[in-house]
Image (cartoon, rainbow, N blue to C red; front, top):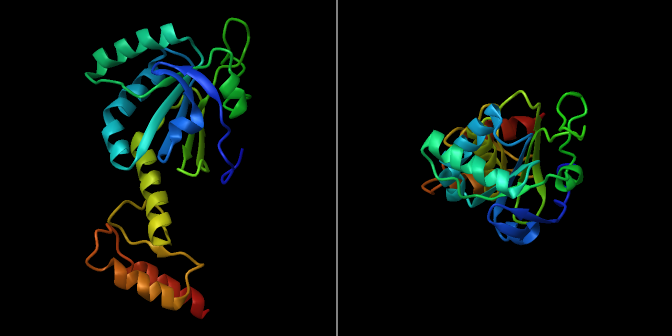
Length: 222
């Protein structure tokens, strides 16, 4: 799988019932993320954080869906623990992928760490993340080792960047967050850039195109 690929479709059992993945996406953005195993300490902190930050993803039209290489029964007990530990209410579905069918489909398996396996020697999933847009296109792929927890704030930042870029035809520089300057996309010509800058004034856009304009004209003049 690569950026720009259509996210493979699948049917799976989840803690919220059986789903067809493309139907679950619908007209939304989706963050699909995998976990090595239920009840593990790092995974538990991640799901607690995702549950607490779900309203922020929802504001952006993003649905969350997790995956772990265990059964529905195991997931359900784990969710109860997470809700108690983090005083939250985890409502997004978690895929039961004990046979690793989805994990193999999305290449979520660990090649480096030979200890990251179950009792049968089958590799557990690593901490993969896929950001998928409403067209079912994969826009971001991240892979973390089982030993390293993810950053939910960074995923929100990436979603903001992708959605802003799609809407305003800009790219975002290092460490960009909403409200910072953005860069006009190279495919936008001078006249279009002036329109972009004009339209951004007084609008609800939470970024400035000042840096973008300087960069744009400097780059086209050289």
